[in-house]
Image 1 (cartoon, rainbow, N blue to C red):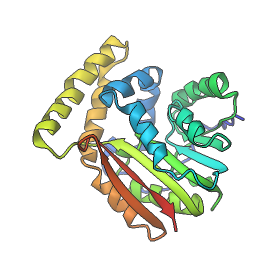
Image 2 (image 1 turned 45 degrees about the horizontal axis):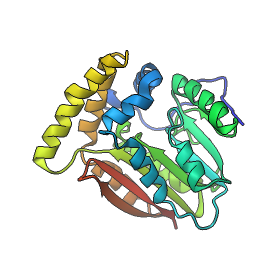
Image 3 (image 1 turned 45 degrees about the vertical axis):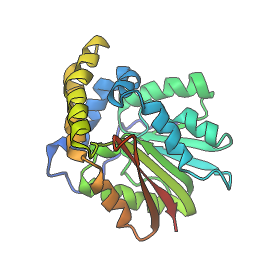
Image 4 (image 1 turned 120 degrees about the horizontal axis):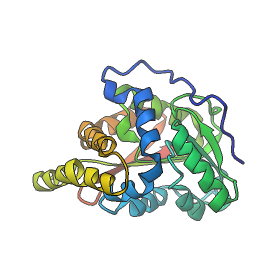
Length: 254
């Protein structure tokens, strides 16, 4: 079932970010503009590892217990759904994203590849509309870097609130590697190769230069780790992928 409310966004109930880079309205507009080419650009951005990391993301969630409900936050065009369904073929998937254009693309994917089974909610992932303790699994790919410290804290608290006791969560995002030489190569890739690919794919390269700014702000992901580890209701594990080019945060609600 597909459910997209008439209102494009439910207001985020966190303090306005001090850095305009993380203003939800600006982030939403950015992803609206990138929606048409985001699948392909994700591959470029991640050095071709995006699909592998999505698979590893779902591998962090225990298959035991047959989860009935999976919540995909900051779901974009629905690129993670195939891995969710492969891991949990009987689960009900609900996808949340506040970009109207991403949701339009996601609706097409839901009907074309999933028979319209994915429930879509066009709203801010921090809006707090999911009922307490009603979700078995929360996952998200590549959205953490667009949140500041306060927003990440709110996200972690939402994971605690919405998961059933014993429920699992897993998040993954690109990060800056610790090795200085590799970090230089990665920054060069994001600063020059990614915008060039944006031109070749008929997308405005300005948007993809913004992704470099988000990655530079996110760094090694330590602010996200701190936000999740500060939640007493979560048991948290952190893993680095491909020499630190990505990081995952996973675990379960105690």
